[in-house]
Length: 448
Ligand code: UD1
Ligand code: MG
Image (tube, rainbow, N blue to C red; front, side, top):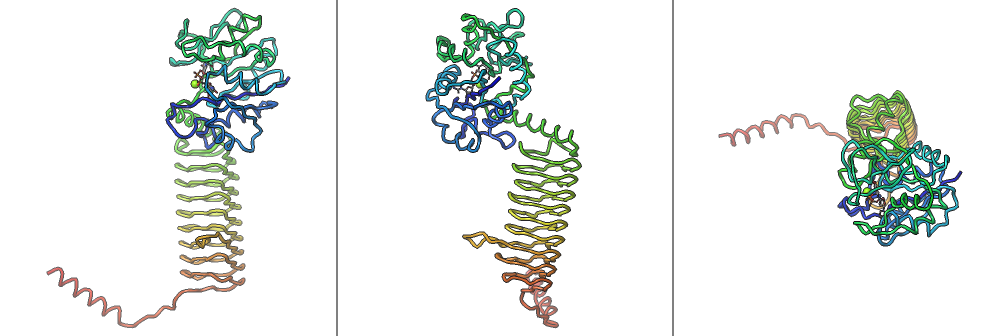
């Protein structure tokens, strides 16, 4: 039993009112279109064909680069039936079944498709996915016949359309490839919209002696995105589900609704996520680490028993080993911090490697950029960097060294050395008192 997948994504998405194509909006940091592509992969689809409009072609290809998909262009959006017809014409599908997904319906589950395949194997040629809607909507409605067969799907504004008690059509369809390839040619556009409705395939199937049925799933699995408001509803569902999954796996959150995750965030059990933390894409955290409030983390891998934040910013290619501390107003980018190393306050660490048990004092800046190029700083084990030091890369600081507070360091520091680079202090005895007196006199004059 084999399946090929066609993802319909040529619609203009005009209701999004955005210069970004609808299917390239993101949920949990992942393109809408990628949800369908990943679902096809999860069900081991033999091939995945994405139908795009010509104005979205380039951007969609770029967004899906690296994924195993084929593209097919629908130049005028003449309806879902037309989109499927073009895909079937462009590719000679040999799989037993053809699965039609929508590029804007991100939450269809792998298991639901499996149920549709099981239903198909009992002898039906067309299986649509439907749901019972809580509120009135404008989806196509199932007309169900005896023994759970599907007689017709009626679109809004077409004769016989009736919301009451009828299942709504999610749009997802599993069809026998050989039969849909033939019947799709026969769909006409003599309806109120002048479009080729894919859903007309049900009536045609009955006419030519084929049978259709449906599988029912939960309404929230069929959430579609057509507007910015619906995008935010879909994002909310994604975040709620993600939080539940994390908590069920042993991650603690005092206020889960204030924390936001990406589709690929991985956090091991025993971690504590304090309120108001954002995880952008590419984050992996090992067990028992605490992320304190108001931290923003992106592309960082964090070890066990670390303490991050409050107000920390971790940027891509940050690699923190176990028991590392990154405190408030510390930004780390493209840097490795080895076990037990600390940067607790007000620092920037960029393009660097720090050894074990090293301490970065408050206000230390790794000066990695000369205006044209980025340079690397290599700090050894057991190094103490005093507060407010500027480490001007390229630079190497050997094991066990000390950098004096307030120093600007631009030459390599050998191991176990003290590097100090600041003007010598002078104490002018009695001068402070005299200045104070003078200032007081000026202040008194202005008061009068
Ligand atoms: C469709 C279904 C409707 C179902 C609803 C669920 C038809 C005729 N109707 O209606 O029964 O309840 O989805 O959301 O199929 N697309 C193309 N090319 C086109 C037109 C659409 O690729 O020419 C793509 C869109 O990008 C989108 C999907 O097909 O991903 C659905 O199109 P849309 O116009 O939203 O269909 P609906 O009118 O909502
Ligand atoms: Mg729609």
